[in-house]
Figure 1 (cartoon, helix red, strand yellow):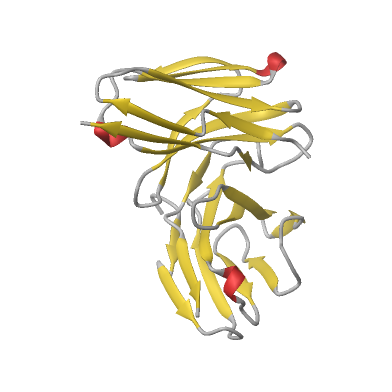
Figure 2 (cartoon, each protein chain N blue to C red):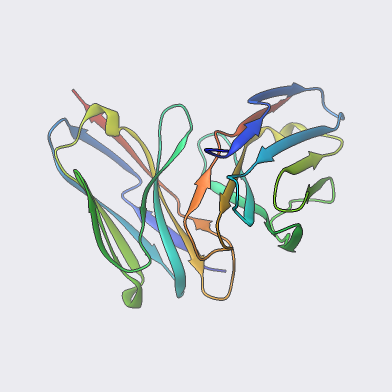
Length: 109
Length: 114
């Protein structure tokens, strides 16, 4: 089956710093989403981004499906950005999302 | 409803008992998914429904796990003869179409088997 790898696995930032999270997948996909799992376990939708680039405030994402990767950019990080970031892909020909390994982010005040 | 709703939020059960977990999807969403998340781990796919049929049950870990869905509404995940390794958070998601549109998650049910 498809492999979905995220990097880095862990990241510690000082408040105000910028970061880039990466999601690599091993096969073609129909869809891709980025989620933030907050410290209470809730999965929050960040981007629905099968291809192209989107921006929402301090966050932006780019998916290059032909090269099988997606990037999530966080600028001017805040302590509330702490948590785990997951990408999830829907492999071509299937109807389910497969989650990546996650990036655990901690933002220090 | 406004979002995906799961109940109960927490469930503690004794080993060997059966449990039922409930998911109410967003109104109008035809696709529904169940995932399991063990402590500190990622999300494992269990099963997905399109309407009330389940074309993909490939993630159910054993025959102790089953799920059903009534029409395009509520779904129930049942775990029979629970084991300690079943302890996890069980998450439900729904989307307008299967795998082709944005999925939204509920808050999860934390299951503890003692």
